[in-house]
Length: 453
Image 1: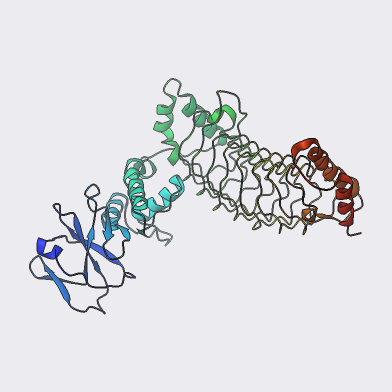
Image 2: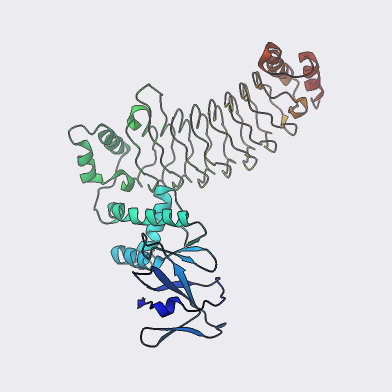
């Protein structure tokens, strides 16, 4: 796009009212005054010509916008609306020039431009979705920083010719060399496979235990852009034994991973001390096993409220001792096929999410499900439990004292389990864990009344 110099007289041009539901383009700037001139691409409502710039060039509906001197023309602020804009033209030109424009491959599939690719890579690698127009100046500055930083690592994805991983053992070996860095291990890995963020792992059907235990002790690379669309097994990928001095440090965005073919996520983040990222974009519709997935995590409280859990059969210990997990609402989960929720929220000290609408017709085991879940006060009165393995379901759940929130039980076999579940809790309360009214016997009596026999 041509650039024009804004003269001092232009800076004093009257600014007319205009619609901002248009596409705007940057035309010019002044190094001295740090102004930019913005013009709409629609002139149907033009009242009059407002400026003549650079030898008779006429531009309708001119608005003057201020841009910080430290940023040059990276961002502009419209003085009428207060909305900040990224000047995308220069960035689009850079990425298109460096990494190509739209092309059509031999199969007739349209490819993205370099700019569209880098926006997608930033979203997956860094977990950041860039926006053209935002109201926050800081947000714009952050976006610019991501684009600027991307110039340093983009070539690792596009320009360096690297070897794809053919086998799982090959990938494990590269991870170990990267972590140990003994005898120039990292340099060797980079020469063959490139940097971890650009590793070609599309042939992998399993990542089980890849960064488990000491494998991930020194690994905290941005691997969110990995192509995982063929992976079916993600058990133990980031699990950690918690050995003192050898804990995992991994905490990078993974929301861009394609997990649509994954069947098991058993103990995927078990004991991962630092991991705390949103995973709400994951398509987990084929996952059947989520047992122990976030058990013993210290910081995880990422958004997973939108997951499709309709295929899950086991949630055994899924959030057992998940110390920071405190979602507001998980009612969007489809739990119709879940058979085992044993210890699901046991000792999850902060958990008090709304799960009142869960479908539990298939649930046959829920032993110690809320044992030690000190914050849980949820209403489960719509639950109808048909199994009989519910021992200590609410034991040590200090604040679960409202009998109207208890689930209903259908089978006679659940009677003793229900008695144990409630009396254990009341026994803890009478010992001084919390204050409540009524005796253990009266509570149990009300549990009996909930049987639908």
